[in-house]
View (cartoon, rainbow, N blue to C red):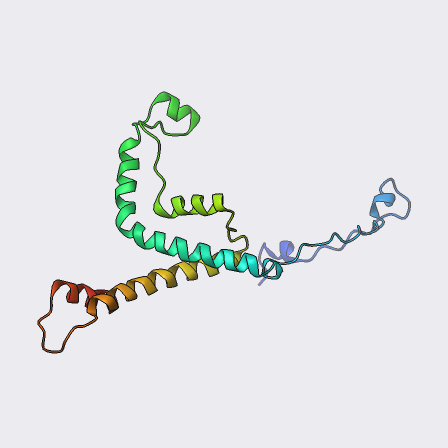
Length: 171
């Protein structure tokens, strides 16, 4: 049983260009442009860049760990600094502020590292590596603090607040 859609499913026949027409000169293949040299991928840029990216990951990882405590207060401060919608803010598309916005801990450390000339991750793989590096730094610091708080704990001692925090951080 044929349906009304079958006429649309048939493949159209290709249109053959005329041998002599006004568009024949445009139908000819153009010579390909010369290859432009491509800069080397970031992983071939050197050890100095790799060390800079690693240093950035460690510093930002520490900043993220501090940000767990500090960033909620920074965000609240920034939220309180915004005025309600005004005609001017609706026209320009930016909210008006009572005071300057404060940078979060990651933004602050990122600005310091940028001013020092430490490289930023550029490619997608570098950004993923940076995320993993920051996560490992935060985890290592958390586990280290937990281990320090549990250090010297005897089997017969009663658990103290420090021991309970240490257990919480290392589990």
